[in-house]
Image 1 (cartoon, rainbow, N blue to C red):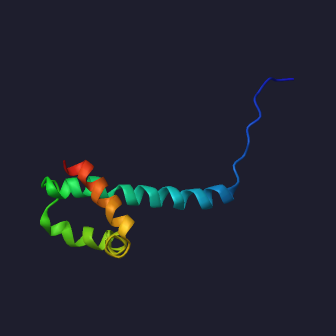
Image 2: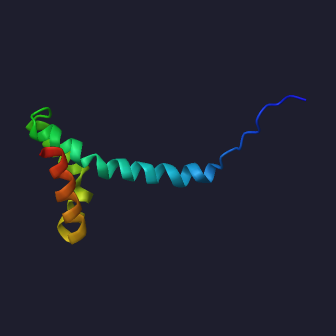
Image 3: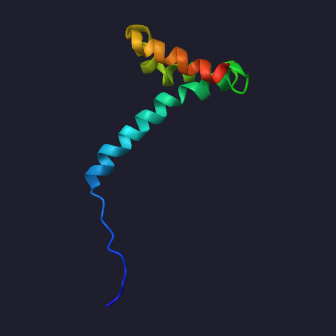
Length: 81
């Protein structure tokens, strides 16, 4: 008998649920680095339209939900200070 450890198989459901959650978290927290890249001149003004479209859902949340506005103001300040 071999002493190999038994590996648990992950359910495909956990991937289907987990991957979108991770992607949303990465999307939300990518705002800070993106603002820093734009403000520091690493991304030109020509790309700004594409960036604005990419972040339009978060922009809408920013202007319509006060706690989202406070969070992003605080978070972006961390990246631009």
